[in-house]
Length: 298
Ligand code: R5P
Image (cartoon, rainbow, N blue to C red; front, side, top):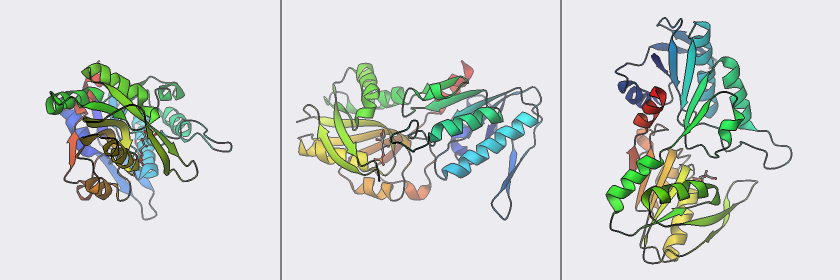
């Protein structure tokens, strides 16, 4: 088996490769003056099972395009199988039509990935459990929840915390981790303005008074969901608020806003590589590399 990586998350790809005692196979990604890219593989891949690792966070289109071109290079060079590890799958929030006239962006990405030659997909905490059905190739929705559960056990045992989904889309997720930990949960109902995506209203179901509140979500983009939820939870009597999210999308000045927020600590994973200038004091990064490696082995 040979392991390849696009340029979006090389540290994670190296960690995954280490579980197989392998190095990432070299690839030249040359960028022409107009921005077009040319991929050249160095290793012979004829008849080989290959693993290609690439997250499609920002710059989303550039990272997707690199992924398509690398897949094509592997296919044309004779790889017998291409397994894609796409730890963070860009465009997953537009997985269906919300309003008339919209497209289904994720389906476009799925069609291209299949057309260029991907045989199997491994991703993490997909926004909806229905996403694997968009693909006609085997697509695995791996999860960081067991890693979060372990961390919560270590850091919060004896503190009688309560788990919170900061949005109704995360109910399945919060029930799952609540069962793993045997800790109660509740949810926040969040309404977004469909035109600009901003949160216009939030309501808490249930009681959090006197407890430490641990929010769990799939991703943090602007950080607005977690920050507003934390304010609401503290207003309703939570003694402290913590945030766990698999994908640290961290758009714009999200890092600064999260650092300045009332959230005590923010836990994320390495599905998205966080540049040094977006890391902040309250942030702790947990790795999903072993979960990805185990899934590739089984
Ligand atoms: C929404 O449906 C997701 O589960 C996240 O809650 C959302 O994408 C987070 O975005 P932001 O950090 O911009 O509020």
